[in-house]
View 1: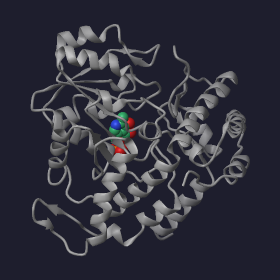
View 2: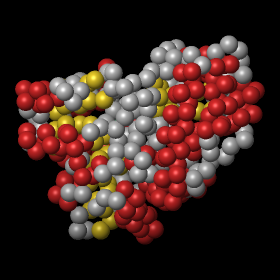
View 3: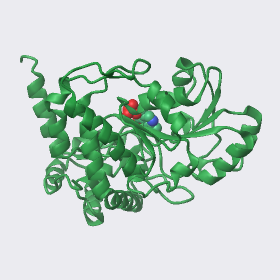
Length: 382
Ligand SMILES: Cc1ncc(COP(=O)(O)O)c(C=O)c1O
């Protein structure tokens, strides 16, 4: 058969519309956001050149989206400055590091073995940016920073920057504790909130984060239900100027106007419904973890419980293949997330029904029941 991307896209859409997605790294877009992504903006340019206005014509409406959109995103997070142009969470991480470090500086971050983002380990961003990296001591039983031992590491290593945030992210940090150390030892704190951006936007995770972190940044499409992209947020004007200088021609050129406008639309939805969405996400993930643990699925539990975020961790990574036969999608690296099902309107009683289906799916194919459950829901909070 002829290779046909339109046909494959239709099949993909149909498959996903008839599956239940528990990937913590993904979410589902409202029809308004999808409309904007497929609009004429997708093939246009706009490039502000300092003091000279825009390098391109035809941008009168696009420019308004970028300027007012930035203001809207900063008001959503209750922060003075928002940079909404980065194309991804990874690029926002690169911009954050570029804006706050100089060559040969030392950073500390959660290691990938403890659920940290691989991008901060030595061979990746630190290598590209000529930085040195050392892992933050981690308490696996609490799935959090090892607060007993971090001071010793800081005293020995003398980091310039501590990067908080992770890819396997369950519990908020004691930011006051880290801030007190930063005052004593003189390092800066930046916070990769890629996974928990939607929970922070909804005010339900790591409250007062901007009191402690100089830059908060990350992806816009995991617990935040926007299009794929990245943002950086700060209250510090000087840092914001450096962030802006590290966007065009240093980490990217054009910034995909359709994505920006779509992000602004998603932020309007988040502003209106974020608190309710975020608290339901957390409630649902706790419920899913408890149900599955009680039924013997193999859920990891920690000193403070299963989770305070959208994620839960599972014992057996290979479960993903078995579940996908029944159209239940999880990742194959040991996580499940309730962000997408919550956006579809799942409440705890629906999570109970889903938990039963997950257990049945370990024994037989329950695709039909999964499709039936999925079809009862449409995107909400928009
Ligand atoms: C903590 C963290 N930071 C950054 C990224 C990169 O995000 P993106 O895929 O938006 O580039 C990820 C990706 O999963 C992540 O988990």
